Image (cartoon, rainbow, N blue to C red; front, side, top):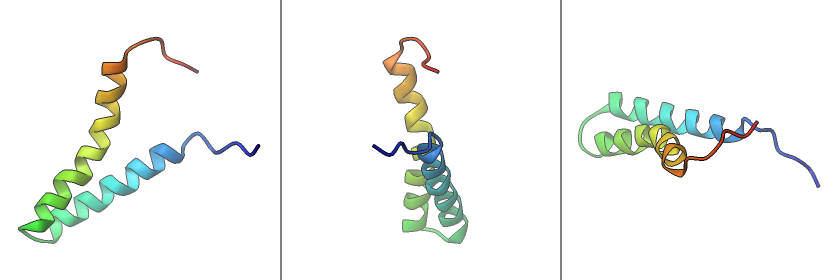
Length: 58
């Protein structure tokens, strides 16, 4: 079984956040909604991990 690189989730979050920042700078209206959703994608995993609690796995 092939193991994926551990930074793939971080890379995906970074790309979505970058797209959100660019959308926020691009205009008003639906771009603001896209920016809010894109930037929330970077905070949601942190909130999920804090809510989940437990020991840190290494």
